[in-house]
Image (cartoon, helix red, strand yellow):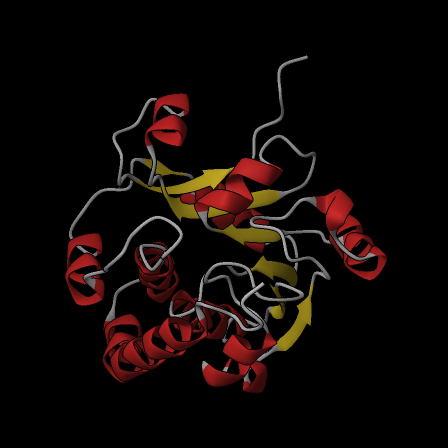
Length: 224
């Protein structure tokens, strides 16, 4: 109705904020005892950049806290096992700005010989990533990036393109960023791991966690 993306400017702003942090964050990852584990924590920390929920974000403060806080759900051993069994990963991105943190994790995975296909939205919705953000963040220079053909929050498979659904169906391992992707994909029968912060009371109560909890959670199938 506005004739433009109302989040365009703030998305670009936070892409630049995150890019300014990129060199120091890469150094933190490269000097850590477990670069993969550290880059996973940073990717979860980046999930705080969400203007569908928050009006302002302390990115640097969240990064500092994330490196010194326990994950409320930590399925890292299961993810490590899954990574040992495949070199192909479908990576569902979430928000602008946050995509720079995803880039660091993706680069870490690629340094281990993994082939990554990253996914963005087909057109703008709130501050979710699009091809524009993939370009601004440098992610398109790092790995293959595709869009899901949808403008929905999260990943509602029925609303995505047939090309994306085929890619999703054949994926051997999926890393899914963000609460909305968790809400729309939890319980789907795929080898999938969710990286996100529980940002609202409803999701937090469903998971029996405090709001703001950080999770690296393996997908679990619904009972029955």
